[in-house]
Amino acid sequence: MSGTAGTAPGGLLARINGRYHKIVLNSFLVIVLAHWAEHLVQAYQIWVLGNPRPQSRGVLGQWFPVLVQSEWLHYGYAIVMLVFLFLLRPGFAGRARLWWTVALGIQFWHHIEHLLLLIQVQAGTNFFGQAVPTSILQLAISRVELHLFYNSIVFIPMVVAMYLHLRPNQRELDQMTCTCGGAHQSTRILAPHAA
Image (cartoon, rainbow, N blue to C red):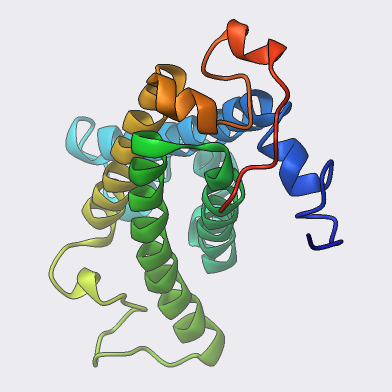
C-alpha cells in the first residue's frame, strides 16, 4: 500500500471518504447551491426583470462587479468543482459512484471550456474570430444559458448520486467506506475503499 498522505490508511483522502465524507459532501453541496443561486438570480435579472446582460450580475456581482467579470473566478470555481468531485468519488459505491462519475466527466469538460476562456483573456486574443472570449459550445449557445445548462447537467447526476449514496443496497453498503448510508454501518470496521 502506498505511503502517501492521500492513500495511506487514515490519510487525507481516506478521512475525506471515511468518517468525514458526510460533512465534506454537505460542505461541497453548500458551495454548489450558492453558485446555483448566483446563476438563478442572474437569469431572473435578465428574463424576469428585463435587465441588460452586462448589468445582470447575480447577487455578489451587484456589490462586486469585478467578480462576474473575472475569468479567474469562474475558472477557480470550475477547478474547485472538479477537485471536490474527484476527491469525494472514492466514498461512493455502486450506482451512486456511476452517477458521481458522470458528474465528474461533465465537469471535466466544463472546466476545459472555462480554461479556454481564461487562456483567451490572459493572452488578449479571442478564439474563433469572436469579439469576446468564447468557449466551444458558446459558439452555439449564449454564455448565460450555456452555464445554466452546464450547472444543470453536472448538478442532476450529483443529486442522483447523493440520493443513491444515502440509500445503498446491501452490496453497495458493504463497499462503502463512510457511514452516510446508515447508522448501522458505523459498527463495522471501515476498510480503505478500492478505487
